[in-house]
Image (cartoon, helix red, strand yellow):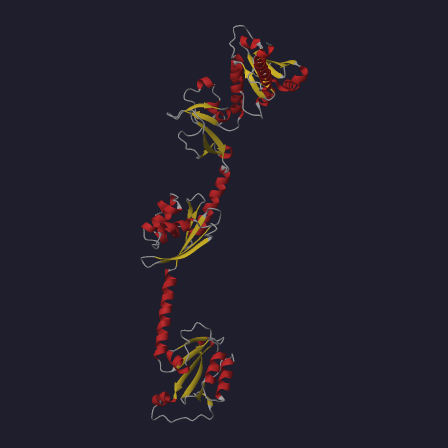
Length: 523
């Protein structure tokens, strides 16, 4: 009969095993939310910490903990930071809570709270209560006192702040609240009045409607100070702050005096000067700039930016029209950058004037433009080139072969007849030719003659000498009359004329003079 019940015993054993394993599993599960002590339900501010983590809290405790300043690596350190600030050195005992078991601290100087700590079952039990606790006080009284204490501390910080701070009505622009530093900026006759007699709205130390970043000077003489206004990005009514500017009024006066000295120095220069600050505005110019460009002094005195300055020049046809004006203007605006350390360009204008414009950066971001009218120099250069071209044309029209050497022995010019005679192209060659090279070419294309040695000695002697004439013969059989003479500036003129040309130009009645030697001084 027992054997008939064996299957049921096996089933019971399986169920019992599962119950035992399940019980063991329950003990292995991590602990979740703990039940607060019974006194927490009575309406106190209770916090329950498990190590560095806030495990549970009463309703007032949660409100209190949410009001604590953020900080620390965990919840317990965040609470300790507040306790050390509120209870002072007495809060150090919280570090020994595990060994002490139970401790009491307080009341706090700022909030009047009492702290009771207890180490129970491996957890830190913290309870905060007002020192003047009464049965009818609401449960969130500690959190309210904490917020009041924090608000009072923030107000004290703002009052002690040495920078003027104030709030404004966004619609009317009036001052609604100020700190002591702002109050100190008010005139003495207003500052000495009691707060009740100052009226509404509150007196304003700074002009209403001042924009963010404005520079304003308050006071006069040695007591004057420069302030830069800032608007704080906070919700609610606008909050303004005044920061001491880097520049002082005395420094500004010295800078203005220096700028005036520079203006007087550059006033008499014929070169137009335009100095642009790193912020882009025109800070300095001289009268020559208005004379050269035709820009009105009122326009320049308004401190236009560099882009507006160039646009106005373009509007008045006072700059060349580039193919890509925006890119050209951007290039000038980038003077001083790594890819554009300087700028120099010739501006041929539609009215015939020519400007030489030089730009450089005297300081990071600053740009200086110098505009020089070179119309006269350009005209003179063109006239000189025209005269040289005319002179070359005259030489090329001559039948005589002509070549001119400088005092240093370089070829200055020659004509077409010379190039044809000696098979050279000196007038178009860019190579520097000297006397020695030219004399060697003459010898190579002529029959041997002692005259060449005398010609080379005459050309290579630096002192001025009498003209030299003689006859030479080329290898092709042509006889040439050679003539050497000095020109102003120690230049030397050498001409070659064929015998037929000389015979044609000699008068029939003129007796022929026979030289004593092959090379005789010209009479």
